[in-house]
Image (cartoon, rainbow, N blue to C red; front, side, top):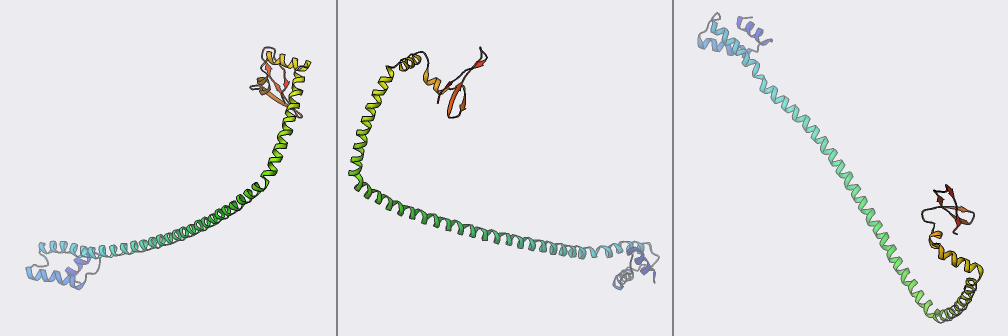
Length: 215
């Protein structure tokens, strides 16, 4: 191996290609350098950087191509996922819209049916009212007469009770106490005993409870 070949091999850490060695020999011959010339050594030193760096653009291009390919695969996968999601969303939207339209159609049918039933019912009521007005009038008059007689009887009984000893006692009790408030039992405890309800107030001074029946 010649000196130039050995020097290049040591600098670039591989066997130099024939065209790389030929390039240096051509420069050497054109410039008239000898192999022992110091300029020739510098030329070899700078030349090996050219050999090393000339592959960098190709490496960058290859790396860029690989990165773009990876991104393309990722973008395609993302696009497919988005497409599937959009299709699923559209299917769900169409199904939801169809269900809503079906429900509205059913509700509309129910409303129309109810309206028809309501018209028939109102017509039946009008007919029944027309037929039953005379009967109802007689029944109402009879009920009025019965109610009037019952009211007169109740008034007579109430008047008699007011004049009785119990009635006079109740009137006197009502004049001394708020009977309505006692029956409402507002603010006091109520207790139930069977069907009866008692109002049970608590006397703070006497420290005891007392009570009366309110229902």
